[in-house]
Image (cartoon, rainbow, N blue to C red; front, side, top):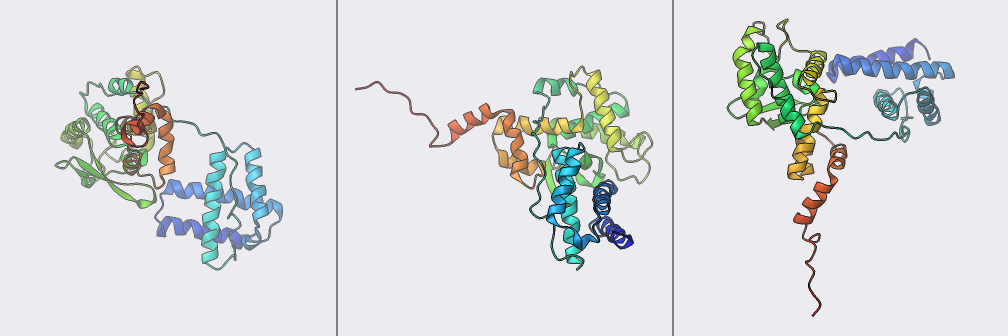
Length: 305
C-alpha cells in the first residue's frame, strides 16, 4: 500500500461528498472506516487494493471485532468497504469485490424502549412561555407526531411545511423524500412556533428550527434540550430524539397493527428494519391477527349433540 492507494481513497471520499452529496458527518464516518482498512492492509503487507482477498477481509473483520468493535459497527465498516470496492471495480482498479460474502459477527438485537403514552403526555405537558420553550415543544411534538429522524428534523426548511394541509416533506436516508401527515397537537405547536420564530431567526434563514444564535439548530442542541426537558418533566429514563421516534412507531403499531404503513411513515427501505417494533407488543398484534384473518378466528365451542 502506498500513495496511490491513499489517492484512490481520497478520490472516493470526494465522490461521496460532491457527486453523491453525502453529509460531512457521513463522509467522515467513511473516512474513519476506510482508513482503518488501509492501516490493516499496510500491516498485512498487501500491495494495492487489487490484491485484497476475501480471506483477508474476513481476517480484518475478526480482528476489529476482537479489539472491541461490536457487531453492528463491524457490519457498518464492512458495508463501507464493500461500497468502496464496488467503486474501485467501476473505475477499473479491481476485478472483484473481496467483501462480497463477508459478514459481520452477529450481536444481540437490542429492543427499543419507547416512552409509554403516559410518559409522552407528561413530557409534552410544557407551559411554553418563552420562544425557546415554544420551539422545543414544537419540535418534540413533531418528532412524536411524524416519527422523524433527528437528521430529518434539523434539516427541515420553512418551505417543507404545508400548514394548510397539515403535512411536511422530509428527505431521509439515501435522499429519499416522503410526505408525512402532522397531527393536530403538533400542528398547533408548530403554528405557535411560527408566530415567534422571527424573534430568533436571522433574516433569510431557511431553517424551520433555529437556535439563539439565529441559525439552524444543531443535532447536539436538540439532544441536549430533550434530555433537559426529560429531567424537568420527571421522566425516569433518558429522553433523546430517537426515543420519540420509537414511541411514534410503537404507539401507532399498537393502535393499527399495520406494519407496512409504519414502515412507510418511518422511511424504512426494508420492512425487516421495522419489524423490530413488533417485539414491543406481540400480544396486541396476535389479537389483531385473530380478529382480522379469516383462518385465524377460533370457532366457538359447541356442546356435543
